[in-house]
Length: 144
Image 1: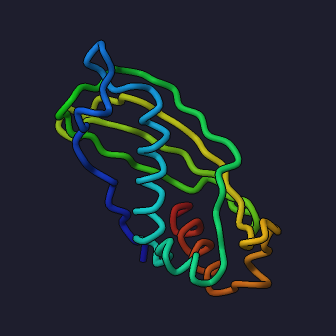
Image 2: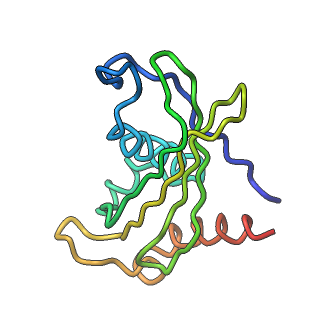
């Protein structure tokens, strides 16, 4: 049965805006990280558990395409999806929308890998098969 992922939702904070009273572009990448941590928890992989097992997930790349400005106090939600998973690397797409209007404010992508605390790549299928299975189950369910 396909597990519904609840979009990450919150309001724009005042400190996230610039002199033009719109959200500064750098905040979208931070929001992607907030949404990613929330998402991992929803699929049964809280980041605290990963770190306890000696797994780090650095960002290899991140990009954002800005569509429509956001302002202080505005509510937004981020939907995300793992688009590729190799067992060592994975790729995520993001959509930032206004939950009331459905207006698309931004899209983005990021890529990540699994490494040990010594920054050595981890082959999840071999070294952490339970985590590998959790991610594969999510990826497979999304193809339905």
